[in-house]
Length: 150
Image 1 (cartoon, helix red, strand yellow):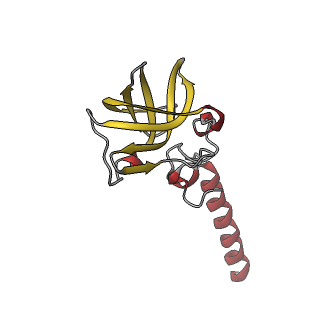
Image 2 (cartoon, one colour):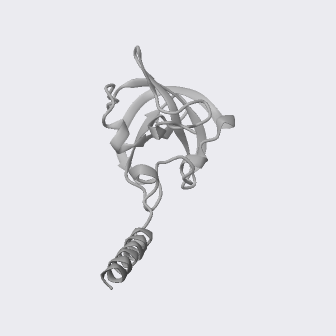
């Protein structure tokens, strides 16, 4: 009788643990805050629209690109032709980089020109500030914070 009760307790515990694991909402791969590969935001990057622009950083801001994502860092870049938002990446990644971008910096941005919330924007692949180069994505748009890649 004890063996039967013990066996039933183990089975019941397994069902309970499985139910709890499946009931928790999925938060994206490894705590990416919605910035992981395959997310709708990451799919906006288009290698066919990559261009390079230079200008002066007018401001740096935190934005939440899509509902449910953690905040990201973007800047406003004033070029000879326009002032355009440049999306860098998730705050938890950008804020830990050694090279800091600040208001007033002259930079060169290579990235994919996209339409974001009805206005033109650039999703940065690479930023050059002086002799420093921040590589944020590869040429296919795979983010540096994606870890092992695909």
